[in-house]
Length: 422
Image 1 (cartoon, rainbow, N blue to C red):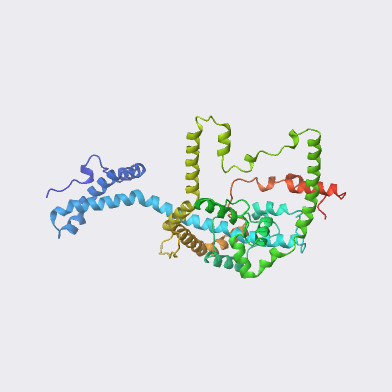
Image 2 (cartoon, rainbow, N blue to C red):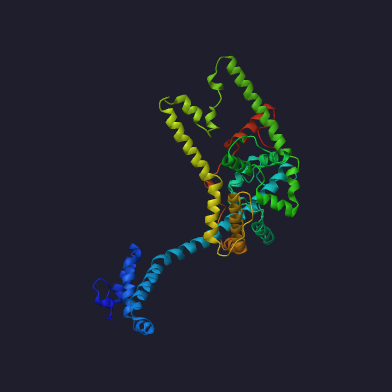
């Protein structure tokens, strides 16, 4: 068999170490599998040990072995660095997610304080009205009077991550006391905006909306473990006082609107257009404003778009998301429970797998965070949804939002001082 040429004998291949390094870099950049395979094949055929290693085998197998070997090596050169980078990114992703989720512990501590503050069992520095808890919810990492995490709290949260109660990835309204209490008092049947005859994916969306009005899963788990579930049953003394002043303001507004209508000044007393708050279905507005000749086609297209949106954001979307995450990050086998709906089974299995992965790194991440705080280094904050102004630029005055402003107006109407000392 005629010997194959060495790399140096092929003018297209590099002849020096410097040229070889440049050739490899360019081939990797251009994702040139054929070029890398050609180089590695020529180098293997020229390697002194290769002929000796293949001598016991049929001679004509030698070039085939060289080609298979070179192709595998070229694939490793092209895909290996990227895959290792992706593995590193997944490692960071899990640790960052664990750092984000640690803030759920602080949200629960803040909510428990809110329940006690509303019952007037305690005072909190600088807190004047209930809406400030919604503000601290968005800036929980800056709250100055929340005690730091303890090892016991982190251990309890780790147990939650490993439990069937764990629910990941929800943008909870962590301090939404009114919704949580209303849902608890109604026995969980808070269905004021749910469609009665919706299809399965619509019902899934309704379930999602309802979930944000119930206690976060971590709150419920913490309550069961610590016996703090009675906090939500404490009297809402402060909330009732605020409601009284808000009621005075609303009654005053209604009286003024009635006087405007009596004078014939209807424009100033007209309500907002319903589309502002109810924009789930534009069909009636299309029927009202569009050319009748174009309307049938537009409605078909719009319905197709709505159906696709429900499909992408319903069960199938979430099931696919958790399946992909589990397959990418879960190296070991993972059980999946029987379920009448395979999509729900996938979602549950994926969530459990993800929770255990977070639990595996949680204590270590917390210790790193504590070390960073001690050294004055930055720590990973809570997961953000949307944008928020910098904390230093916040205006904490009572005029900044609707409810505090109306409470103060109610105080005036009651002939009382314009402050929150009630």
